[in-house]
Picture 1 (cartoon, rainbow, N blue to C red):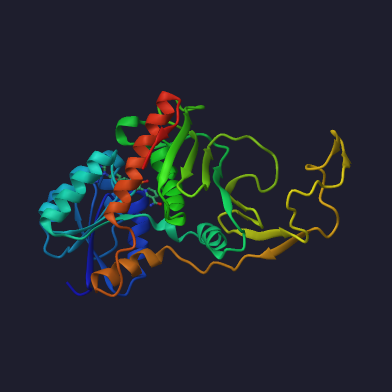
Picture 2: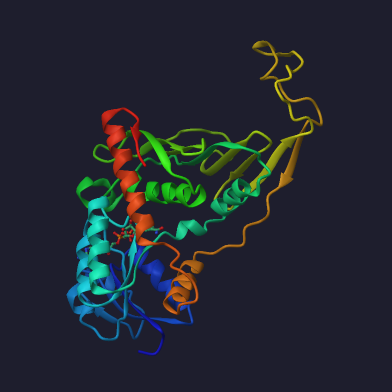
Length: 354
Ligand SMILES: NC(=O)c1ccc[n+]([C@@H]2O[C@H](COP(=O)([O-])OP(=O)(O)OC[C@H]3O[C@@H](n4cnc5c(N)ncnc54)[C@H](O)[C@@H]3O)[C@@H](O)[C@H]2O)c1
């Protein structure tokens, strides 16, 4: 074993390949072994890497000190338990598990075995989140009352195991855990109330649309909406959007390669009735176009960020230089919230949370 982190990858599909690419860029890490039940996947293993068809055999290898678990979601709990019993440190893909009870079992197993345990929530490092979080924290917006985070697509279709509920399919487990984790990472307050609408718009068995409202302790309401089958011909409609509104300014951030601004007004109104203007719908004080010069846009700072930082921070934690970036207890809270979101959607009512 040459490098400090000697990885074994369990599940060498889409995400397994992405992790293998990332490991080649890390001078403190090496890829010692990969495992997949599909022999075709193992043909792509980098030269010099041991290959296994059975996770138990990879876990028995002394050349591996850390495993990355990148198998379909329903297998995460079993793999985490096995890896902990084998004394390996663990980075598990998101969603950590199928529900909060399973996450608690993972925490118990990894603590009992005294191994490191984290979940790959690398989207805490996305540029769009970084810009939205900077605006939220800047104080420039005044009292923030609403945060909207959305992701829109047009294909609707899901693939492979993602279309089966028993494998952990559906969009709440796929993108939902990222979007909700980002909101919890951004707004450090208790979530007191949850309302969720979830739908199977064109997929028969799994959710492909959701709209979630989270009410936070100090009054911020967050809305997280994902639609996989939104048909729209407007420029810039698809991909990622943030809108963060306060009583002094608002911020918008659009796209995965984000553009954004903080927008304020030259005349902050305090209950002063605006001048009546004529709109197509008739006379209005509040909804006509703003007069020339009234709206002021300021650029948001650009966000230098990279998913590699997830691994850099993990290594820093192993070396005792920083704390763990994604903590098991945060993931337990996230999964408890996801359980509540599912229950709210199935019962068609809002639920108290923390
Ligand atoms: N963090 C992210 O941004 C991100 C992105 C995509 C996927 N993921 C997560 O990564 C995980 C894998 O997703 P994917 O898209 O790579 O799926 P995938 O289907 O492309 O790959 C999964 C691989 O696991 C293998 N496998 C199944 N059972 C196995 C077993 N018992 N032992 C060993 N290998 C086994 C399959 O043969 C397959 O090659 C999921 O949990 C998913 O949610 C995370």
